[in-house]
Length: 110
Length: 114
Image 1: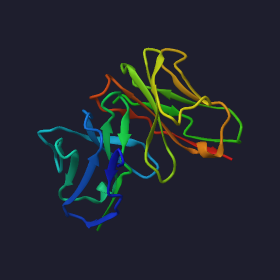
Image 2: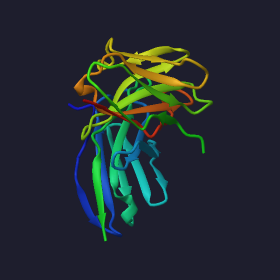
Image 3: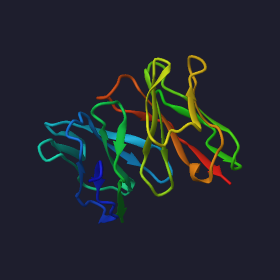
Image 4: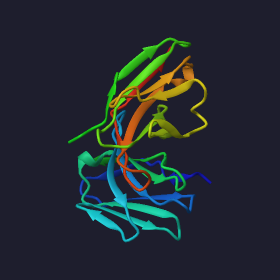
């Protein structure tokens, strides 16, 4: 099983749509979870941390299910500027390194 | 807003040559990292550095790689004898604390080995 697994997409959605991304991780000892956004040939940028209680930042909502080792990201009212690759990132648990998923490509179309 | 800066943005080198990639982490951060991303693939951990020594390294980080913090601000990655397969984006990152804190990434250095 891959350490962090994501559907690579692409997800092609119209502006205004709601889109959800899912991610699973294999290491039950992982403690920290993040969604990063990566534009083409750019660095990963933190979108939001993910907490067990779930958290929301504007149009973005992240959820964590530790029992299922599952993380989700919901984007409401998609904008053209949301087009990017969304990276599910998990810390190793025993160390301070981050494990990245392959990313899910989102293309928001007018 | 403080940021991680990397130089150069693009480096082309011949196979077998040594390269040094440079990074200036955020000033009050304590942990420093190098990651790499081969084109079309996922971001992979190379090495973490804390208190002037390597705290962890991956299988990728073999004897050809080394890191150094030569002064209070710079953090460098050296590849001694580059191979074609070293061609990738190399990202430096830093965190204020360990584990449960998000990492801030530099804009990356694109290394092309020819």
